[in-house]
Length: 110
Image (cartoon, rainbow, N blue to C red; front, side, top):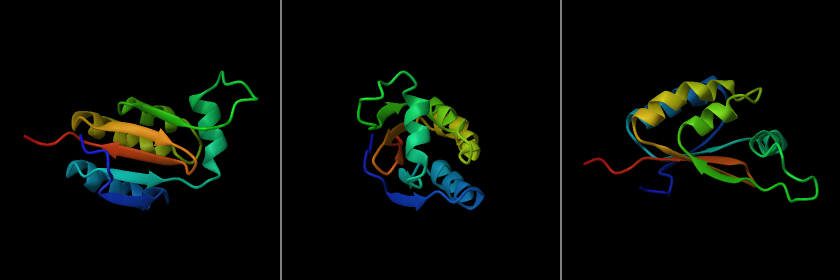
């Protein structure tokens, strides 16, 4: 699986979603950069039991269902539309901060 993004995009809502659909259909790995304002919401949502004294660093990997979790955050709801196509293409999701950024990679086609 290629873990280096071929494309980098900045989340701007529906406009970005349209571009992301094309990348997913073409199985092109991408990094989606989110506004820094989303960092705290993502951290609390992905690590609800984190100790307040711990650094708020995000480093989580998983399947497309991870996007469903992210899409529960206001302003990122549209990302849920990508979960099924990414899963069907065998994509993997990695979310990391600071940034925060969402990396989606696909296995090589045979």
